[in-house]
Length: 289
Image 1 (spheres, helix red, strand yellow):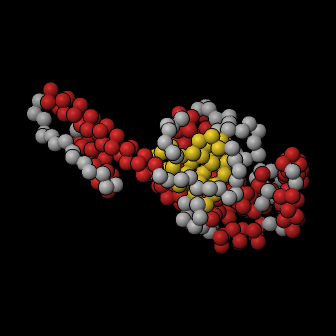
Image 2: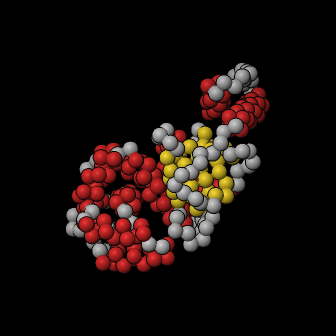
Image 3: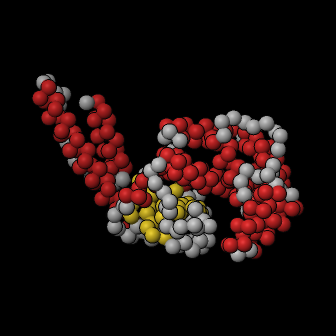
């Protein structure tokens, strides 16, 4: 009974703070089991009614809102959603596709609701097999919020696939964190990237997509103690993001026996990143990942 009352109170608070006129149902403490059951039904109906009002409010809010016009990526987006209070709202009306909702819920559960509410303004989905881009983030002007685009190709609800997507989401999340820490990015680059790395990154940037794959694999094979993955050799930003994933998912701090381990250990020197690691690992544990 108490839980239903809390849900009802929270729904009322959200609606009132959104400017929606609400007339809440009243109820008294039940005296018999029959009255208790009747009250439960009444409260459930009231919660559904309030949730419907909230959904209408969010849809109305988004009706005249235009998606952000990307300046960095030209991806063949299938669906675009606004993210309001951690929920998907279809841009320009429409409905939420089940697969989009499922991938978004995994994203939200991995990062946590607070992080999604703070950073994510739009959620976009595309579907390209063997794409060079699995996901992308782009700043919405100077608002401190971002558009997150995700390639749903190959997604399923299998644990192995979910773990792969979870790692992808941690990678993209780290970019958002690094955008706020340009000092850390500068120090990381100066500490761990040499002239050879920079020359390789420049060559990758100039190469065609098919040639890029060969460049990444060959440079990684020549430097197995310096990078955690071949994609980490693309640029300092991608190196940081790939190393951040290792920092989060690896069980313990590695020995400083290689440059790539030193990169991982470098994140342990920053209390803010350690706090994020602990939070993400807690979320992954709850998800069984």
